[in-house]
Image (cartoon, rainbow, N blue to C red; front, side, top):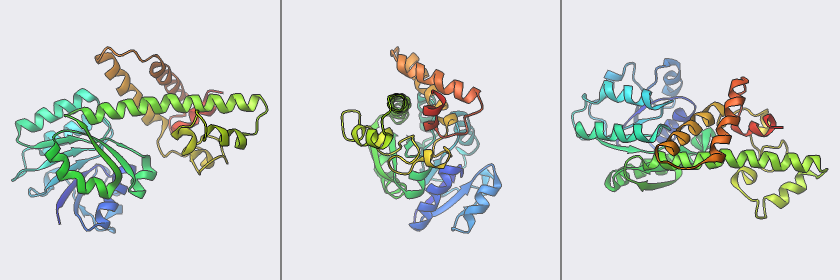
Length: 290
């Protein structure tokens, strides 16, 4: 069994760890919130009380943290403690340039690094159906691939360091724009007196078809079960969508890319968060915009 270190045991990380434990990986986990690691001990987690207690002979360190500064802080604290070659894999969603900086930092310490943000939300983490968008070296990707296959159903090496974060930025900007459009379409249909179930059947099978309709329809009782059927309790919160749009718009600015719809989507989610609705699922933007 490979020894795996895992830092960040929140909604996503905890479920990823459980899937690794189910496949008999030897996982050593740490979270600043001790209660989160306590809850995983019953599943077989080796709880780490302090980052410096991370075993020096682990093979892979996975991080799933709120932002790039948190990832950098963890790396700064433990990057020098390991006795052998180790692969750092960051599954957080962070700034593209920060990911590239962390790659260079690891290189200087003779540690390999992959940026591997995920798509699929809490439900995907629990079901082991996440998609991993990976940036880095092909050999490192192949080393990590068995773990990606346990925690998800899809992974792709998108390019060199930073490419995983860049791909995630593009994906989530598109998702935000699409969800807003889906809400406008259903709102228009409602105002025109259309039956939402019949509208769904057409939209989900015609040229308007998209994931936001087919798999995550934001209308209660329409399509597969989604947060709309549970008072928009988040699978992926609007706070997190705003964070991802901020990352995407920074990347757009850094690369001189024109993204007016992405900018407008960010403005909409910023208003939602400002109105204390950031705890709702991002698909609740469809109600907020009515």
